[in-house]
Image (cartoon, rainbow, N blue to C red; front, side, top):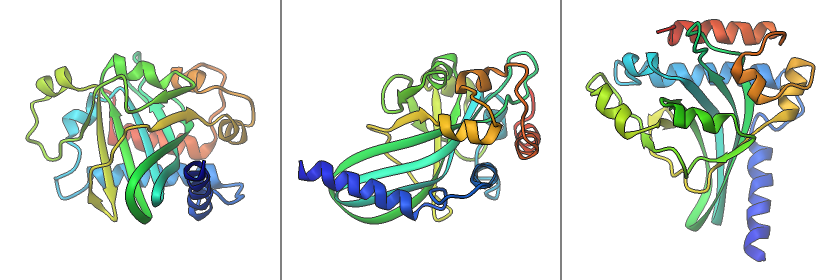
Length: 230
């Protein structure tokens, strides 16, 4: 019981330390800007970032620009993020949907750590996960640490993996554990940003009639430049 209380306290502490946790009418726009910066960061690393040929084949991108982990024997990693799915018809990106992430961990650990996480969804198996209200990142589709640089056998990589994960801590690439990581849709964020009840499923599928705010259009424009239609 004490361990669960500890995790709960750590979650509150981690959320309180996150810049996205404060009441801020522009927080969703800021999250989009932070997500764009995180994606650019893992691409533009002196030619040692995400291979462009991998990025061009990506079916969806999940970004958590400010994952916060707080730990003291028991630990918790939480964060808010953005998901975009590529339209199978046009190759361009559909409107962004907002998501939340949480993960509990055990063992000798201490301190607070912030990280960026970019997930490239490469297969239909991985894509199906995103249309669920909630899913466990550590089970189901095969996830692997992303390859950097251009030395990549793309066909072989896609046969063996559904998702490639790129994470950075203080600007350096680093591995993160995904066991027990739960990603869920953020209905409140979607409502606040789009001004109407809209589900992640409808956003990711690119349903017509959804009015995308200017900041969202700018984000999609930038993404279509970084990962253009294939």
